Image (cartoon, rainbow, N blue to C red; front, side, top):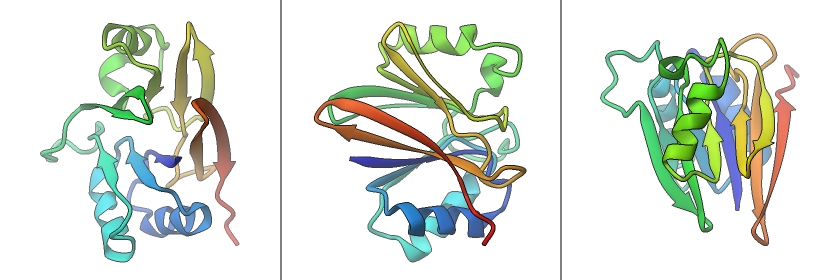
Length: 156
């Protein structure tokens, strides 16, 4: 399964559409700021499921702060990260993942890409697809193993 992970689009809908066209994912996960940007995916890519959480810039959104689900037998927890002070460290958000029995933890908010594995938990922040470096993550589950690639969207 090929998963496109994006965050902090901040209204840059064309960046989202470019990443979707480039990657042809089977599912898209948006980690907030602006979760309303997820609607643009449905206009052109109705066949691709999208999951979104709200970020600190999505206060009026009815979406959840945290989402938990299972894909390919792995437990995912995704959140924007602002409620877990990810700009000052990851211990709080890692504690969330541990408490929920997560195999994969996804967060945004910092606009800085991050990929690591901590005590068996795959931790990914795709950075910001809408600002600065225009980064995103592609996570592939191949035969039960996870392969993560942080990518930069070309301005071309």
